[in-house]
Image 1 (cartoon, rainbow, N blue to C red):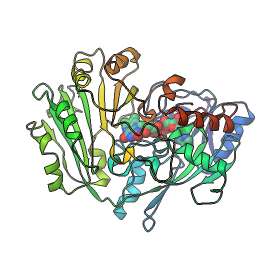
Image 2 (tube, rainbow, N blue to C red):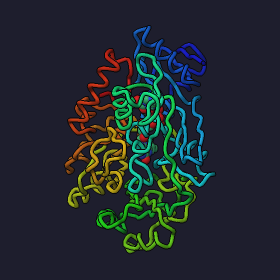
Image 3 (tube, protein in one colour):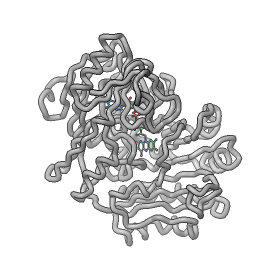
Image 4 (tube, rainbow, N blue to C red):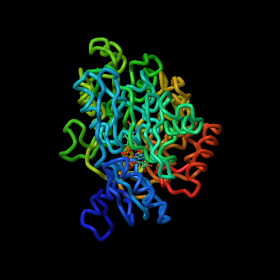
Length: 437
Ligand SMILES: Cc1cc2nc3c(=O)[nH]c(=O)nc-3n(C[C@H](O)[C@H](O)[C@H](O)COP(=O)(O)OP(=O)(O)OC[C@H]3O[C@@H](n4cnc5c(N)ncnc54)[C@H](O)[C@@H]3O)c2cc1C
């Protein structure tokens, strides 16, 4: 296994992930290529009294470590079993790698808007994907988890496999699916795949200056759609630069992001109330191979710094919704990207094997993200002020949180159970996850 220290060449590349804000500054980096390497790093950190953080692709990074950093990008294999409709994914695999391995078989994972994110961390945090209203959270479809716990042991957890009659292992299997990186370093996940070769997907981009009613129309429409429709809206002022498609440059855009598990003709009938808004300035909605599903949100691919706050909502209050174009639009003191995802459907139903995902009653998730290095705390607070959240999603909370803010991700009973398990497994706080319980 390769090891880097601040004196070694390649140290800076290895410590830096997609999120460029406040990167890790570890005393030592272990570049894992196997489960045994992960065990070695855990034991090293424990024996030297250092904290241990892990980084896959670095999209979720919030708090730098000065202890040990375990990087997993070199441990990123994906194996697909088409008969069992499952994929086995190693710690550092991104959704891009899982999608590329699955789609040749006409199968698709529950990946999200940006395939560059790490599949393991996304799933441990719940995982809200493109087909979420039909199939639920990614964490609802995990068959097996192999994990190195803070004592350095490698455990294989599943509802039916070896150890499944152990109450301790059952509790850990419950906690990891929704409780994030608080309990160990996952070496491998086995997940469900779904028979989806193509979707009807893409975005309708509207200029809010000429079509101001987009948010309200989308809100009303979401109350009518079946579970086969998963959608979101993004609102932002795009910079007037060549990298932005010409029809969007410099405009205040509402981007309706659509993934519909129906043929294109039926999907067009379903989105007719949206099309009634008028011609969009750009339209990418089409019959889309799942392999190209990144085109739905078309998010920026360049690593950069950002901060984001999130609120889970029981409904979309029209009065609060109407504040977004002004508070987060051209008059905002810094760029704000608003993302509202429609939840409900299978996301609101308990999975067959219960897990720790919180707030299934939420019907919408609202995120405000700002790129850059400034302090956005007050700005984001003012944008979320008109809303009455019922909780938060940690996957979309992209910055350091207080303990009280982390607690908002779970119902009180779930939180107590998770904290008790963390205290048992990691009494000295060896692990330094992005959102510590
Ligand atoms: C552009 C963008 C789009 C996104 N889209 C979605 C989306 O559609 N749906 C959604 O649910 N989320 C989405 N997210 C959030 C994303 O799922 C989280 O930020 C996630 O933590 C990213 O994982 P990573 O491996 O890329 O990040 P990293 O920064 O590498 O890891 C983040 C944290 O995950 C934990 N972790 C990583 N690997 C392991 C491991 N092997 N074992 C235990 N813990 C581990 C650690 O605590 C680590 O600090 C998006 C984020 C971005 C930036």
